[in-house]
Image 1 (cartoon, rainbow, N blue to C red):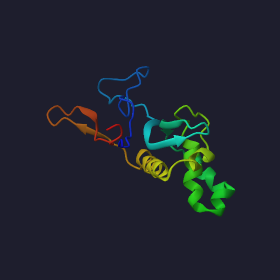
Image 2 (image 1 turned 90 degrees about the horizontal axis):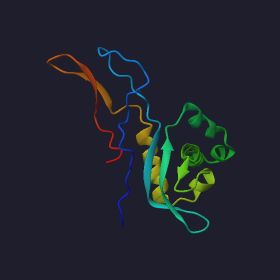
Image 3 (image 1 turned 180 degrees about the horizontal axis):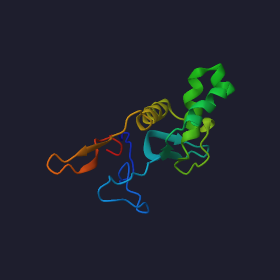
Image 4 (image 1 turned 30 degrees about the vertical axis):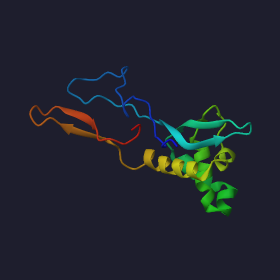
Length: 151
């Protein structure tokens, strides 16, 4: 049995935008990372019996969190909120590129729980980046305190 992983690309969470001009005296501008790779513990089994474990989840917007509240299924059963929400945020699951609430409904319970925790992790209030300064020269720089993604 393999352990579920939250694999992310080896690129840092935020990187300098090479096209943006910046002064050596200013901190480098950061680009926002909006998509995160994951590996499901069991995998989605499609209609032909294919198993899909690798996927991508994007960060949620305010619209993503508000739109499911208008969905009749969510209004009838609030527990359905995470199913609709995850269906909006996962653009790819294996070779499946049309991920929607019906696909999320077909996941094993362990995979749904994994995706709910993964959603919370990447959309948390805080950031793992902190700005600090060298105590000797006072040069400011960004430090990744470790989000745990990709470990």
